[in-house]
Image 1 (cartoon, rainbow, N blue to C red):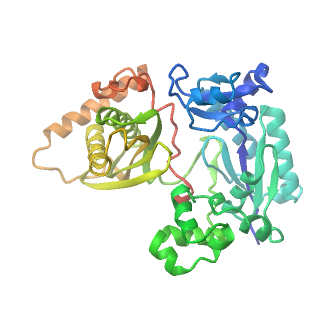
Image 2 (cartoon, rainbow, N blue to C red; image 1 turned 90 degrees about the vertical axis):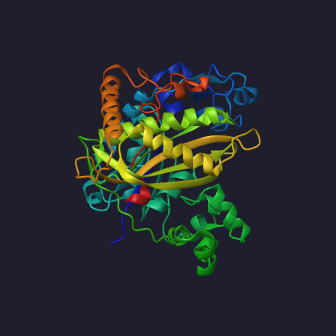
Length: 422
């Protein structure tokens, strides 16, 4: 039996939540942005009203205000957004126990086994969920409905805001195959350029792409994208525990990324950002009771295109902030010039190759320093749990004044398991 999958996307999430909490903001151009007192603070999200002025995510606040002088800029309230996200999932759980978040504002719902409990018509269930979110939370959603996760995600993106789009065998070619190739999940700007250079402009053309091109230019990811383009995704929607609000599956990596409030053009500012990211990753690693044997980085330029991603395997699994930060810094230095002609705007640090911290380890001959550093890291973790993540910071992290006071761990939530790890 074909599956029945919904993808529910809360429209203009942060800004919509602020308007729901503050009715006086309804109908006004609103943006949520980091560090609004800084000239180079960036837009995180914008309301439907602000979008009409051409305001874009990740552009500087001063640029947005040039387009819309009356723009209302608010600081992010991540605790509030997490609460709305949980409230929305509480509604989804009433229709299925197979609910999988894809970020705070997006969720897949598998109705295949429970649709008969709710009238048997998927479109009516989607309409009911849409109306309940609007009535109970005061925000709108766009919903995609189809037989797999990729097509359902495409449907929720197809029309916004407050819309329901069904992708079925009757309209599959006219809607899905006719769409630009960049509308397919996981086709980023770099992949789009490669596909366009070969003459592949639509999802339908990607579905017919030859093996040789995919192998030579994209590798394994190319064959995966072609399967997606053919509507052949069979990735399951994972069952969740409504009480835990989380998925029951093995975490394969820990990571964190950040778009800087300005172009990074000096080694000092780049190192400060690397260490901030490594701090949060190492802290999550220790909280999870794991050690990691692979460190990787990803870098984006001022146009938010992915320059590169690199990784390095460690001699021994580690939990140390210093080790993760040092390796990430080495990878950056080896692969990226840092000057005004080669600006960096976004960076991510990730660790993988996980094993339990309690697992037996082959120690080096001289491990005194590692043991001391781990004890120090864990002591700092205790203080941060009690007094906040910014109560203790390394001097190197204070170089870039635009990052001062940033609690990168709690203010930048990363979902550790994405679609490709299902």
